[in-house]
Length: 113
Image 1 (cartoon, helix red, strand yellow):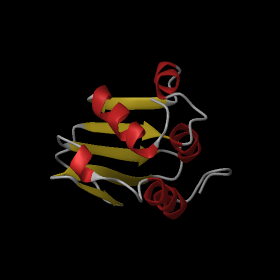
Image 2 (cartoon, helix red, strand yellow):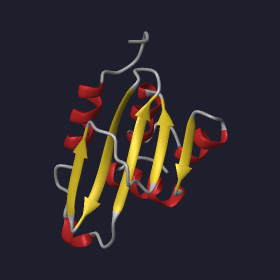
Image 3 (tube, rainbow, N blue to C red):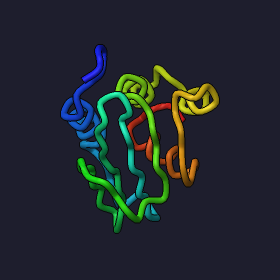
């Protein structure tokens, strides 16, 4: 693992804490975003389907977007310390697929899109 990187388990625990009060009845639609943490070479996905939120450390083949970002920058983004648009424009965040779905995911965590 790279110096200053954050283990996947810590990232997932933080996300689950941030989404503990997720109310699927307020979410209409489908969300499937895969996140590739480039510095630690780990992957996880976030899915909202039928009002149920799933976060799991697996590849997601039918995703709407694929994000590539370092674990440190991902943590900063979900904590509002790094604006997602700024990260994208400076190359810290790369997105294949729907940018809008990535923004929706960031909003679930209370982060900055």
